Image (cartoon, rainbow, N blue to C red):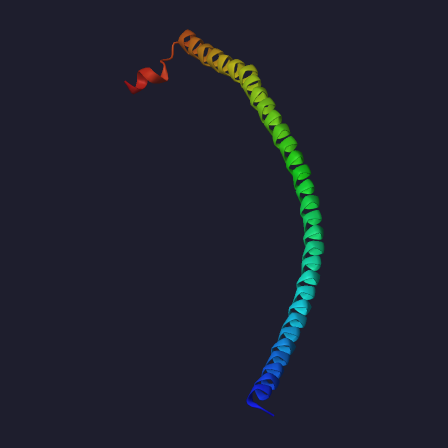
Length: 125
C-alpha cells in the first residue's frame, strides 16, 4: 500500500466520520424541530383557550359595569328627588312654624301690655 492509497483510505474514513456526524446532527435537529412544532401546537391551543376565557370575563365585566352604571343613575335620581322633597318639606313646614311662633310671641306681648306688665327685654335694660 502506497502513501497515496493510505491517504485515500484515511480521507475516506474522515469523510465517513464527517458524514456520520452530519447525519447525527441532522437527526438531532429534526428531533428538536419536531419538539418545537409540538410546543407551538400546545401553545396555540393554550392561547386559544386563554383568549376564550378572557373574552368571556370581559363580557361579564362589561355587563357588570352596565349594571353598576344603571344603579348609579338610579341613586342620582333618588338623591335629586330627596333633595327636592327636602326643599318642599322645609318650605311647607318651616315657614308656617315660624309664622306661628311669631304670632304666639306677638300675642303674648299684646296680652302682657294689656295687663300692664313690662316686656322681659325692658327689665334687662
